[in-house]
Image 1 (cartoon, rainbow, N blue to C red):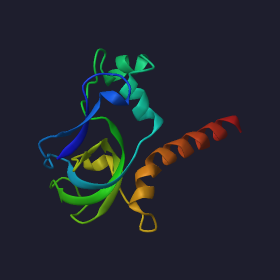
Image 2 (image 1 turned 180 degrees about the vertical axis):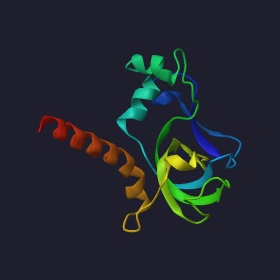
Image 3 (image 1 turned 90 degrees about the horizontal axis):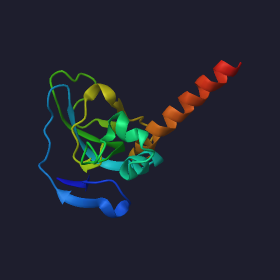
Image 4 (image 1 turned 60 degrees about the vertical axis):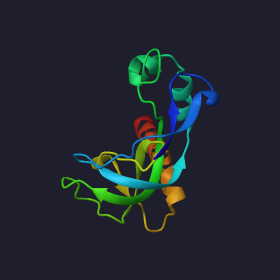
Length: 143
């Protein structure tokens, strides 16, 4: 599989496209063939390693803990583990995982893609949903 790999913190120049072993769906995972991905500010922060508190919070102090950065993705399910009951091969799904194709994320952290939405929209909706939820919580507290 092809994946964007990062061995050290820095600008976009530290990112490389590499060939890696293709993942398989392990326990409680599904294998998703990525069709759309979105990149947000959080990926830029992790790539740069700033603010430095991110490194202490688990991103890796001297170099990135995960060689493949993560973002919001959407695609088609290719295979599932027996413990995953929400998805079947062929389903559309979206969630957060590594920037690679295909990916094998945990099944419980992914959702089915809305029928009215394109995969491109679904790949961007994870962050939008989090922002909207945060805004609603903020407004409720102020009321």
